[in-house]
Image (cartoon, rainbow, N blue to C red; front, side):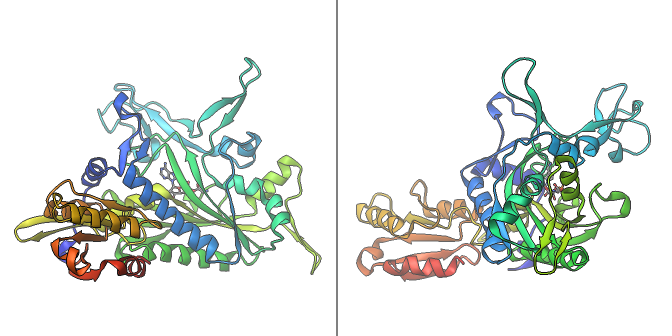
Length: 438
Ligand code: GAP
């Protein structure tokens, strides 16, 4: 891939493409939207699903030491006292006396409003958890939270999973699901959303083996992003300073991506020690230790936690795969997305939409090759335009049926990245594509 095709794309350009082509829409847009909440459209849902499947494959199917879980969003509120989120999951905020806007104290310099220059009032602590009511009887409804991380669902199920799966440390529990945070500083498209998805692994190890496993997971996780096709030079590791660490963490590395607004976190890999299991054990009164029958040892496992955001991975993939080039004096925009992740794997295009033989053959080809991934048929424009449409959404293969196809049974397969075209027998197409989309 030539360097000249790579461009520093702005978030605005990607957000436009996402809206125009059906990747990501503003949530409840017809009512003017709602701040920092997003809906994934027909292409976005496929891309997101493929990212999650790739994570699940690498974390669960390709390993022999990880179980899966799908815990609920609503949890007994004691969970959040034990985890420390009720007490310390808060931002310090200052309101401007003049324009009334609210700012995170760590995002402003000095005591003046960054927007209007007015005086900032003394900072107040603002908890980021969303609250709701459980039960409908007035006066008896219980206040509960929408989970701000999926991790706690894993910790409270530790004993259940241990006994049902007969695991012993080192082993992990993987989970993908929605989390909610009433973020104050938003913007930057989906980067900081109020409703988002996390992919989290809690990996339980014997105390003393935690540093070794920590190093292992930092590397594994960085490599996963590289394996998705994100350019190495746009990824870096950054270790947290002591005063930056979350209340539960002994160490934490952020995996950062060079977003248009600068290096920002894609994923955090933390050593949570035995903080969570000890807290839950103490507050619930349940034993959350591990007893090793072979050695007679009893201990509370330490936890290494790689915690990534699905939405941030999707955003980084869109930005990193965006390409622009000039072909025969015309601009070509394409997403060089990893073929495994592309929302649509192949588009079947009839060269002449008024030729019934060609149209019939094209429909039949789509029927033959569909099944394991999304394949579309499109005859709503001239071929050049149809190619450009598919390029812009990252479809790796366009299959064109022409007059000759009717006699020789062959079709033209066009490669998105190189635009090279190959004649292939239609009957071999399914196998051909399956070897290319791995
Ligand atoms: N269980 C640990 C935890 O939740 P975190 O660093 O607060 O740690 C982990 O979040 C990941 O979740 C982040 O690296 C990011 O990818 C994603 N994430 C967190 N807040 C987010 C938000 N407001 N919008 C989108 N993604 C977010």
